[in-house]
Length: 356
Image 1: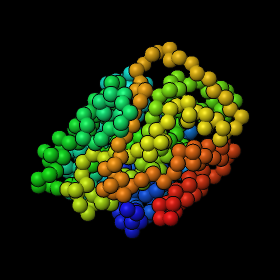
Image 2 (image 1 turned 60 degrees about the horizontal axis):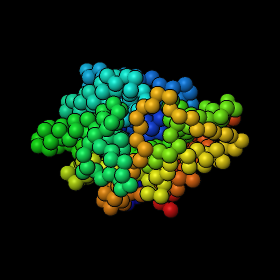
Image 3 (image 1 turned 90 degrees about the horizontal axis):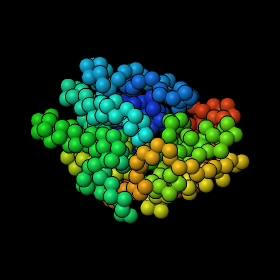
Image 4 (image 1 turned 120 degrees about the vertical axis):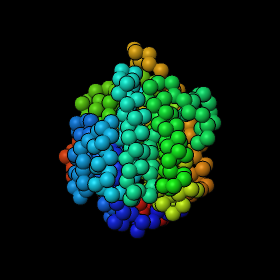
């Protein structure tokens, strides 16, 4: 199933978390497709930030606000009159959640509640996508990938808050949207997304880029941990494809959806580091035990057969290609290139592969 660019032309889209890594890429893509985009989020959390470097605010309505402030969120959505809502605002870091668990639950759980309350008061909305995480599952550290109908869980506050958000969405869908005001509401659980423009702390690729740019050796905590790595474009492609289908058939396409890589691209951290080091050139790394000894999953995979069969969605880039694209993006940023132009070029090349 191929995306229909005409679907997005002139479509009013409301995105929370638009100043973040994934949100910025999604805004660039939607603007390129001709959508009328309104974003609602805090100021960028990092410096530098893709939102600033790629001039994401140009050609869209950017509202600075907090999803924890319900009335402000409701008013912003009513003013935007969106047909499509995509909720990406989140506290997205596992290790940060150990230090700030209350904030993590406030943003990830109550922020989701507030978003759904806003949707209830906005008659223009036809479809909603809530982005959660692959970490929402009760992880048994098994080889088989998790299916959408398996139990929610999460050992750490971040992972658990995403499982809680999934339960919130399910309850709201059944309580308020299946009878009467019928709006398509889906959740998306993506694997570990990587891509140019991410400068978050305690994330593998950004940590490597910071170290290598400074001429330092990067320190790796958990080299044997296996994750479902994928380029950010792969997940966003799945989100857009799902929203197109949900708009025409909300009953069939509401619910939970996994978006992850081929099983062969569920690699351990050491493989990713080695591949990125070789692609970057002239860099080095070493293993160092985690002094804080915080729990993080060692093995996590997704079963994405639902998206493959019902959406005909599948990854476009092999992991080796994704890492090449990412290294190229960061090298160009380091060298002072026009990152707005380069980012749009990468999006265009990716889209051309969707129809080839």
